[in-house]
Figure 1 (cartoon, rainbow, N blue to C red):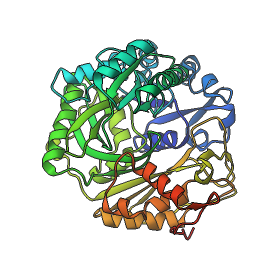
Figure 2 (cartoon, one colour):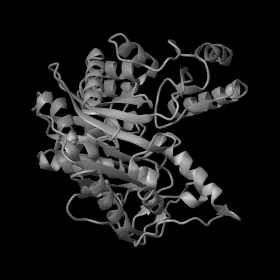
Figure 3 (tube, one colour):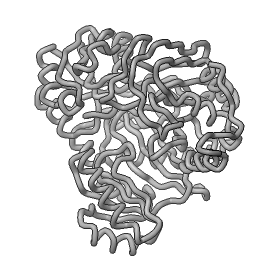
Length: 466
């Protein structure tokens, strides 16, 4: 039995985990940096411990300080949330060595799947389709260039470790390969401390479809349907929805079976996400597996009724899954918009600062996951996402109308946000019709640019009421 959990994270995901623990009668320990002394997660937890200076390298990425905080507080377990140390196998193993339950997969499984190249080998062995690419990691640019010629252009360069769009470059012309490879490798070393890269053929204009997995320690694995995460900018997701209107029931079943097969092949335990690319001919390819809770997990919770954070904790505590695949029913449609402190009109420049006034919508079928409040100062040190607005409707059209209404009510004064930008997307004819893929945002940007005059947008744009 887990009685006390230390949350090795901050922001809305830390608040989300604290609330789940309260409902399970589990005490919580928050950790915070000097910059987060007034953060909501530090105020809501039963205990809060300062673990260092503002930079993440001196606080939220410090394994030793987090483990020390867990030991001092008497915590039984550590929940890593997403980002920071959530997919660090060394941290998971260190928790185990210190007698702490890590709320996530075992370190050896995380190590296997955290390396994208190893993950490809694992799923290929059980017949899950992957995008054609290199079989071994590459560090030498000349060897990579030769491999690219064998695969054929266009090419996607990816870091072997990490995620979130870092260490990734698309290459259409061989003349650009060397610069792109070296830039991506430098980014990978800076972000993940690892310069190993791999190449795969670039699938043109695919959808990004991911399947949520839950697996217990007794060999039971189920998927909870898919999420369509095709609306993204620079490989960073902006809007997610479930289910995907691109999937027929037959295709959904086929992809779901592949996702479960991949998880079983890796010996996976806890919550995870199998990510696929789906091309225009409905051919799907394994892309990677995220060995943690996802930012967009609320849309799956809406349409299945399963609390994924509680499920994570129960599995980590040694409990069996409470349901089988036959028990999972997808009901209605859910959409999530990520609200970021950034200015889309100025190249999405981050906008830290103090929130002077705040109003967030509510009502039936509307959920807000956030850690901000009126008077809160957003630090300059961390990710720009400050809230997630999630809605549920009986169908996609109802969910879209509900999201349009909810976005129209949002008021955040004192900083710039992307709320107007999200509102614009939710009224775009192609989005309304479901004509979306990973190039959707690029097409919107090109359309905006074409309608600009003297650097100012002159086209017709929906105006929010907020």
